Length: 299
Image 1 (tube, rainbow, N blue to C red):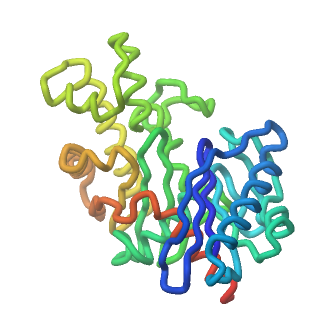
Image 2 (tube, rainbow, N blue to C red; image 1 turned 120 degrees about the vertical axis):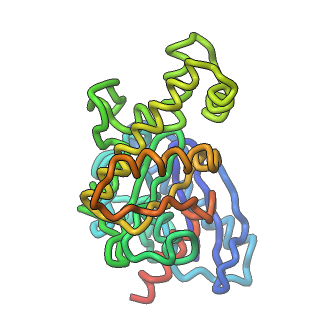
């Protein structure tokens, strides 16, 4: 299977063979071309597909999995909206099938990554699980009764669930989780308080642990916002576990221990979800793309 994971900055591509080996993994810039970005992305995917086939002539792909961010209608094969890529209602699956000459399974990037975690990684023991990716932003995916819950492409926007009255989020709403609890927000909010630039959320955490009051305020606010969102999920979806990935998850116990304590303090009779670190790392999306491509052909 050919696998493509398109991001706002980079596109990952690889060939996944019948044994699940990831071959020829590459990261290349995502082409941005205003209103024609969808066509530019598909053109680049076709080029990468040809290069992968040439480099691995002994592996014959029978389908491709193509992932993109934003709002995705997987059934229609349409990229409904992607703010960082600039498209609306783009028929990406049809374009990609024409360009590659292969059946294309088209899906949301985090949904596919969470499906890989469910099949192969940290979520495989649970039928009701939320996968939460905390990086520059916050993305999520719901798996209920062992199946992804898509909501027409709108489900899983946990980063844009309201947890406060302020600040204004770049999406236009107020008090979104992503604007307080993401790694990007932690860096930005620390800089706004102090006028100092830092090299990532990890540095803010290190300063907080060393006694910096401003860093501690920003870090505690992020933990409180994340706990609020997790408690909301516990009350409405009742997942058995929440699998947390992304850059912030690498904080380890500094994130998971106080977050679990805050969640526990907010709940009463509710099912308390286990907070579990993701296992597949940066390859989760590509593996998910290969899985949905394989299942699409099988279906």
